[in-house]
Length: 197
Ligand code: ZN
Image (cartoon, rainbow, N blue to C red; front, top):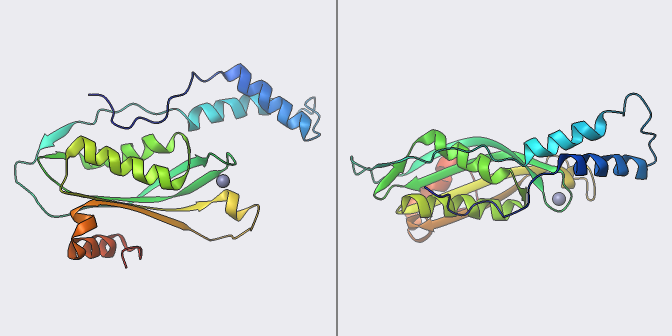
């Protein structure tokens, strides 16, 4: 099946071009690329970006909800790291993914794969949160979806305001989780986040 809400379209990764750009960056910062300890840095940087921005393909097999389970399914603390699109610095944290099944359910491990897929793009946390929610909505037609991402952004903690330890929380709630106060409160209590207040 096709992937709903694929990560944004972009051209193929050009390793020699990234390598040249990394060499130019180092030279621009005043470093001597003939320094033995820096010589291989541009090629390492190129392979690193390739790894961070390449989606691992996966089968999002879904199953009929035979048992007609109609309560919350929540997977907490799915670790992720992504690159912020403004500084190319990582933001790292955890995702909590919840849904109330409709006609289809999905293997629980696939929820971590979905988070991973959207983390392999130049991102902002707000968009990534909505993309994970959209994927669940479109793939499963659930009765409700709740996504919470909590992350530390290196661009906030090592530069600029230098606020180490600060974490950013974003959430996206749909369907019953948006409109039914009891269900919404249950979800936010389960994930231990305070954004449901
Ligand atoms: Zn940033």
